[in-house]
Every structure is written in structure tokens, then in C-alpha cells.
Length: 377
Image (cartoon, rainbow, N blue to C red; front, side, top):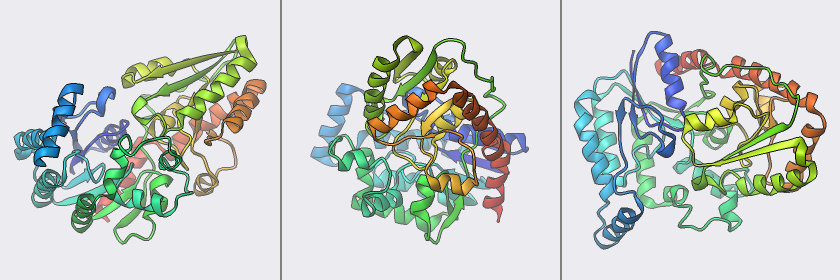
């Protein structure tokens, strides 16, 4: 098959591409490289007018004229590639706003892909119209909306999420819903809001390239190393404020028995290299299931604080811990970290369980096969 994957978050489409290539398919990726993370793409797009000064100028122009400079330049870049973006058997969009454009330009790009390719599918692995609408209708649902509802994040800072409540994004959602063959969720945080949608095809777990993520059994012959990697754009959405407060307590409580590593906004490869020697990784406090970085860390045998609610354990029929369910609760996080530090054998057990789980449920080649089955059913 000839497959076009549109967009890249957290290396998801790259791992899927690698799995599909192992099965003999031709796959290319079109999209942005996800900011400072710089994931590889075959047809790269670059967000123009996004530096500090130019961003202010762009906002001013938009307020005065309704013209979005960045969207225009993204569309121009797409046009340069357009002859190479036809006749694919399958096109998969990573999001309802994969090109980060305003409605008119996003519609032009999408319509071209709809008109010139055989089948188009939508992946739900982040916020979009349906998920954001569900989160607002269910305000106690454990989601990244909670810090906004708690007043920690302003509407301006939360625009990347709130934009999906605007009428033009509802129109965009309706356009996509009408034209795609179906919608696929990547984990339970998106599976739950999509249940009952007529285009929903089910959940396919994130693909993890276990061949690139070697597992070395953990050893504890000195300090227990805790890693906390922060993306400042998502600081509150990930619950980093709770993690930082918990780490302050842990540092005072255990002192020389632990080492805490905190990074901010570093490229993907640097992120991986730094956390390699960690035993424990703090990822996300507002989720039911694991995001991509959490899964990669689990593949390497790290004990990851992430989403692992009862629904997750039930879905995979797990009876052993494969990670630690994180919550936006400092005392709870301190208790969980303390238990691991005081019981290092538990770290070793969860480490082994984590790798086994990834090999069984997230193997990139098996996941690629599930995508092929879904696309061709």
C-alpha cells in the first residue's frame, strides 16, 4: 500500500511508519516536526511568523484584517508539495487541525487531500472538537481541562485547546467527519469521549519501536534517580506543578539517597539520552492512559508516573503494576514516591512488568498490522 501520514506528535507517526515499512508498505510523513522536538518528516512544514516579534505582528494583522499570515504560508508550503500528495491508498490525519491553519486554509488543504486520494482516516491522539466538547460536558473527567477549570491557566494560554469550541472549528470538524472513512483513537483518554460516534472505529494502542528502545534491567547500587522532563508550553496541562512540589518534599525527606534531574524544553534525542540512567520518570498527572513519551520510557524499563486508571487495567486485563497511576495530588505523589524509594525491589519488579507490557501490547509491527486491518475492513 501507498500511505501518507499527516502530522507528527511525540514520534507516533514515525513509529507507525517504521512498522508499516517492516510489512513492505511505502509510507511518507507530511507535517511539522513538533517544535523543539524535531521529529523527522519526509515533507517538512515550517510554522512562519512564530518568533516573539513576528508573532505579535501576526496577531495585530489578524485583528485588523482577519488575515492569518502563518496559515497563508503553511498553505503555500503545502501547494509546493501538492503534486506528490495524490493517489495514496490511505491518508491518515493526526488531528482535526493537523496544519494549525485557520478554517479557510485548513479546509483548502484538507479538500485537496480528500479529492485526490482514495481513503482518509482521522486519528484522535490529542485535543479536537469531540474530545474538548466531552471534557466540558464532563468537568470532573480526569483530563488536561482540569487545570483550566481550576483557574491555573488563562484562556489566552489555553487557546490551543479552547479554539476547538469556536464555530469555525465545529465547521472544520463537520467537514472532516463527512469526508473521512473513520476515526481511530490512540488511547483511553480519547477512546472514552468517542464512544457512540458513528465514525468511530475503535482504539489502536500507540506503536512503540521496541527495536530502537533497548531494555537494560535496572540496578540500584547507589542513589535512586528521578527524572522530570518539562515542556513549558504544557506545564499545567501535564500536572508539572504537582510533580515539582512533590519533588521538593522528596528532596528534603531523602536527601543523599536520591538524585533528581529536571529538564526544560530540550530536543527529543537529548531528552532520551538524559533519562536513560533514571529509575523513575514523572510524566503526566491528568490522564487515564499513557501518552507516547511514557510508553517509550516504560519500554526502557523506567517506572513511570502517568495515567493508569482502573479502566486502563481492565482494558488490558492486567493484574500486575506496569507503572504508577499519577494524580494531581501532592500528598499522594509523595506517598507513591516514598514507597518506591523505601522499597527498591518494587522498582525492579515494575520495571520488568513495564517492558513486558510494551512488548505485548505496543509492538510497532503488531500495531501496524492493526492499522492495516482497520484501514482495509
